[in-house]
Picture 1 (cartoon, rainbow, N blue to C red):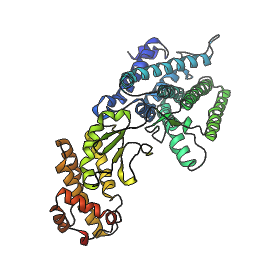
Picture 2 (cartoon, one colour):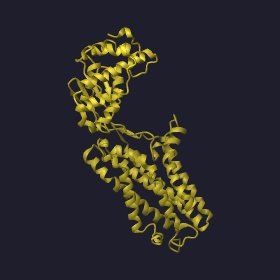
Picture 3 (tube, helix red, strand yellow):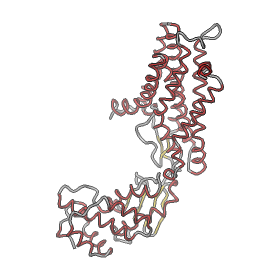
Picture 4 (cartoon, rainbow, N blue to C red):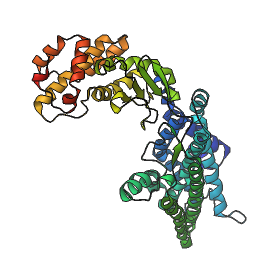
Length: 451
């Protein structure tokens, strides 16, 4: 068995099928979470963001595959070598070209089920497909990058160095060079980085297809340069050709392109007119959500209505709940009449558990911690009362459970204040709360303000 594997050529049909199957399995396993209910509200942009962050995870399989490929270019190898009409460059190009294509095809097949579901159930644009293609090309370009390290260091050390080089190539540009060395400067190399340190695009935006096309061309350039360097290093290691080390000068080409593109700073995202929030009235509430969360409008209105009834007593004033962080679709008369919530990219219960904390703080005016210990104690009592009353008036067991879960994180540090507030009805509490919004927001509430 071992001898049969050792005789298997790196670009044989069986090897290509094995690599494609392995890549497909890895890609499917990494993205199987998109089939769960927690990620039901996900689209192509979520998938592309996820695929980018997964690129470093491919370092080990790609690195070890590169070591296996380059083993035939060792000085004592008799499996393959240059011959008249068959230069080493042609061998390396055929090896890396075939296996890079197999890796790309496998990753495409592994993500295909997720892509099909998203394209048939969620909103998408042509730039989404271009950005998806850019990630696949980026993945394919990492195999010859790993092969460079394998050719330079040999088989044993290459098992460590080849995966490490893939990790460095994917993480250094964004997290070290862009975020640390170029921080607060008018230069950004994010457009040529494998992994982005920011979660673009946001809702209402789409990746600029021009930049994504540039990324495809750039990663193609990386593939060509890496193959050139690998060929030279293979000659240097297998045939002791010192001129093979000159191939390292090819590194200047992608570095120069990165510098030029970084100086030009192309815009990474642009507005997507088809992905803006749409507002609908639910009683006095104006619910503005993106298309992907349109099925959850009723749930969002029902979830926050108990809190809004307690903190917004003027029934004649409309109140807006929006997912638009820029506030472009906000129709309320002032900032106190708007609640901004996040996308429901997870299941409803988990989403509400996260959003209730910030919503209670914003609606109550208690978003800032009070420095005075006495004021902090009263603020805790108020938060506890709001959540308790909202839980009691919630129409469903699911909502009551969500509000009750937040109660466990609040304490009653002033029993006297809690007792006094507990004697009020919901309407009396809302009226009392409305008259004291100023002192509450200023952390100036005292026991004299209690009913």
